[in-house]
Amino acid sequence: DIQMTQSPSSLSASVGDRVTITCRASQSISNSLNWYQQKPGKAPNLLIYAVSNLQRGVPSRFSGSGSGTDFTLTISSLQPEDFATYYCQRTYTTPPTFGQGTKVEVK
Amino acid sequence: EVQLLESGGGLVQPGGSLRLSCAASGFTFSSYAMSWVRQAPGKGLEWVSTIGSSGEITNYADSVKGLFTISRDNSKNTLFLQMNSLRAEDTAVYHCAKSTCGASTCYRFDYWGQGSLVTVSS
Image 1 (tube, rainbow over the protein chains, first blue to last red):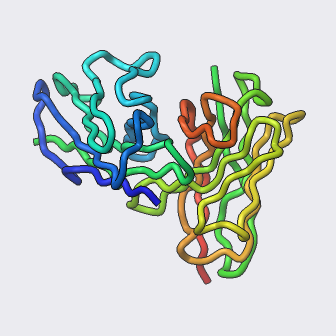
Image 2: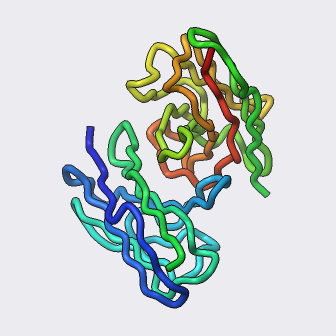
């Protein structure tokens, strides 16, 4: 199976900071990469699909980039509601593996 | 408004069985693939199974293949997960999730339920 590795596992940041989370696939997955946000006790929420497409209703401060094996989620200016855990997910083949998650905490 | 409401979770002994349900509303249920994704306490997301829109084709994670069965009733807008021979490592919150298309390999999940907790313990 293709493995997805996120880095860092956690980070501390302040409101207004630019935050970057990386996701690396163990082999090329083309553009089949999604990002989800999950807050404690809540269901995950789709943020970005197919590497760089913003899901309807998601603020434009979120963006995605990358290709092949290396992908990035960027939050341009961190807001109080953005403190959460973020997961990448590949959808190229079965099983659709998730990364282990990156927790964004208050600095 | 899309709503997904899971039910059927609870405490079960190792080796036991449980059937989860997910009641869907707010969209044309029969047009979309549906999935189960689980999350063990304090852990990340793990895909469990997906069923195509017609119910004819299913996919499973290796960890549950032969033990869990996904099904759907399009006349009742309901998704099911029959879980047999449960083990401690199956303890998790089980979320149902709606896919953005109908194929059984459609793994982009745009709506999720809040989840149903399954605890496997003696």
